[in-house]
Image 1 (cartoon, rainbow, N blue to C red):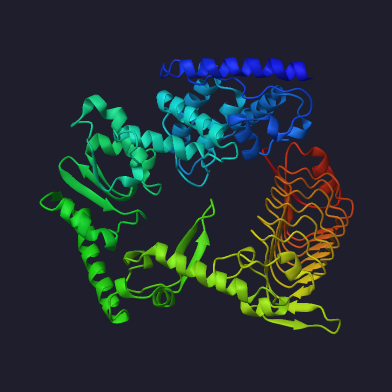
Image 2: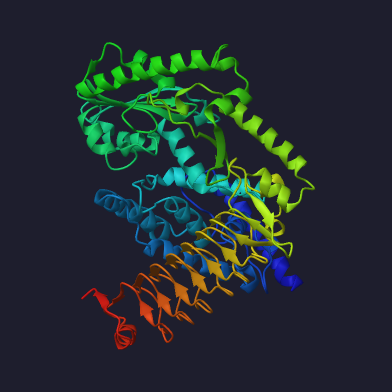
Length: 587
């Protein structure tokens, strides 16, 4: 074993030496290593390095089952295969077409044309460019630039070598490098340093670089703009496009047809010029020809600006710039929420009849977030030794005790401040342990609860989507709808009644166990449910299409009807034998 390790060390030294020599040739070897690690026997994290270790951590690879790096690469290869075979639908057909073409270019290059990339590197790349492609929107993968891709992988190799525990966002780093290239930025410059207008010439004004300019427009466009995807090319075919960047982020877009401005849009792409950027926009478009639409946008923007200024004078005597965070939070009813990577974002519950919004005021958001964090820390300290009753009351949840000392609460949901119970130092399992009844709804999405303790009744709707609950334990009744979509629930425990609809799509439940009644509709499509267990009644419609349901022995009643795929012959036969009318799909 020691001899094997020794031989590996010498080999690894030679590889690293060759890597340093080859780095002088910028793109000749786009990725020097097929594998970062060679090992013998069951592997531990300490035996991985570089991108291999990054992938192990990021994708939670089951390394306890691996005997060598080859096993990791095979595991990554299967993950890559799933990414490649996935159907990347979008809201519009044009999105589907463009996604398919752009992804084919990525897949072919990473998997076939460039055999220098290991399967772990391929997984890092292809996951990065596809993970945000959702069927309900029209974003596109980034354009493939082979040189920028090589630079990005080299950067990641260097970063993970310097800090093995570093978590690198491939997509973010690649797109930042792509932006720097498109904007001809010098080494050491950051995209966040750029504030000002970027002029992207039309096909007529710069035919030689039209394709590159289309990609530049896509890259610099806000996610809400259609120029982020399929409209970049047709729009740039008709006229220039001007993008205003503030600290590297798109805030305004001005679209031309010929020499006439067609529209001026802000981040929201709602045909309104943002009030806080109105003066910037007016300075830029002055003396330029305006379409009727652009003229109306400017007229409305001027109206909103006047209304905002009037509101500021009324509510902030010393000016909004001199107001305390406490005043601003109170007047605008500001809360926080976390984005998908955990950063705090501000939002306001206020609705202004004049048409302006919280975002139309020049507010130091970092200052407000800092203030709210301080208030949260103060409350955390106050609740350090508080009882469950005191905690519930603090967050607006009514609480009382039954004769046995168990708690009855009015509802269960995250704090309405935007911070989680965990942010306040509260263990949710301890918080809910002695709760026996929730009178209204229970929202477990994004909570840290794993054990429902003594909970027996939820009077209203129960949402388990995004929760960590796996076993419903003592829960017997859900009075309203039950949402198990994409949840981790595997065992319904003692649950006997769901008063409303039951949605099992994408859930981990396989057996309905003791459940006897579903008062509304039941959707089993795409679920893992095979056995309806003791279920006797479905009060509404039952959706069995694309389900795995096979055992319906105890089912006695379906209130409205049911559906199944034509291929589900055995299930259809059982349903019809029980006298149920079946809507057969895919005839």
